Image (cartoon, rainbow, N blue to C red):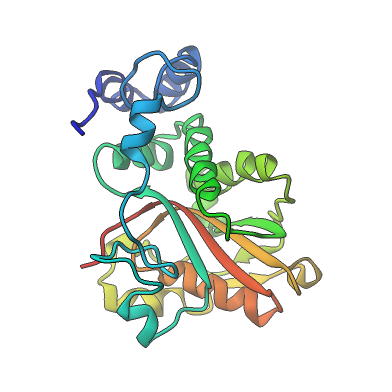
Length: 247
């Protein structure tokens, strides 16, 4: 399939954040990727293009050459989380939309990402949970950015799934360095002791769905899942908008 034309996306991504948010709100009938008329944030053509395709590891959602229940890395060193579902790959043009939400405050895109995740979940009936948690930001990062992009995606997702959003059950207690700026070998150490559970009764015995925008090495999600399981979570499933290719 050819890459969708991106006239609307290219123009909106160059606007100041406040103006870009207004532009997206004033164009509710346009596809976020190609700009053509659409009843939902993505038209049918772009949704088919964006959605994940091909075999993936059930545990970490990395792409596989042939279908298998788990990749070699997850078999050799099982992470703390149990399942990962990624709606799409972190590649053009979706990566521009992810960056527009995260760094340009284009919050209406969170609804579009939630819809992609809902479709991914619908195609995977094994994904079940009792509550939704967004990967928390540190107080410093939240004050700097003004919002948590994972939380913005988790809100409409939890409503659609009719599940509680436990926004205050877990916090990030260390202002860790951005994972994107670290070598893969340093990312696990960067996340050690980063999370704490504030409401153990909300977690204990529950199947937790953890929402994030991008999954790269998985160390952030692994650290959070380990923290959740230490406090009694029955299982942890990652729901991520985009998965980066593993090198």
